[in-house]
Length: 114
Figure 1 (tube, rainbow, N blue to C red):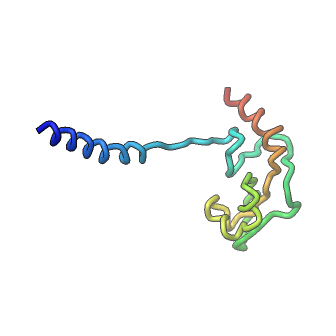
Figure 2: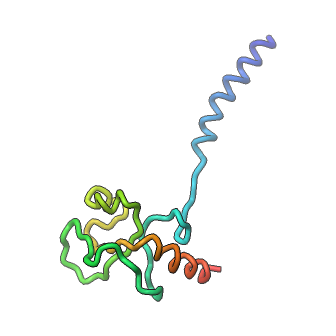
Figure 3: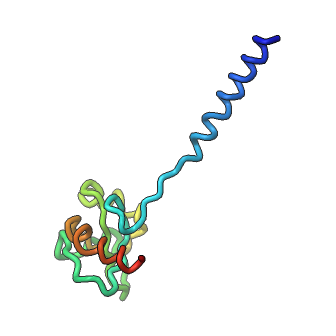
């Protein structure tokens, strides 16, 4: 009987453990050095961009302002494969430099939010 209870307890623990592990998440937001995504430039200093001309994957006639993004180098290099992840395939996109993001954008963003 004791063996049966120990076996049952181990089996139950095995079933519960993966479910608990699946609930773990990580949250990274704007202002974090590891954040990649769309930036609201607003009244921030003029961003330093990597390319002078915006990247456009799907040409769409529009009068919307360009989008400023911080993306990993691999996403920038193969933008046609990654633009959907940022919901920016039909947008004029400027990629901001990491040093500008970390030196100018992050401190000002944190100061405004505190």
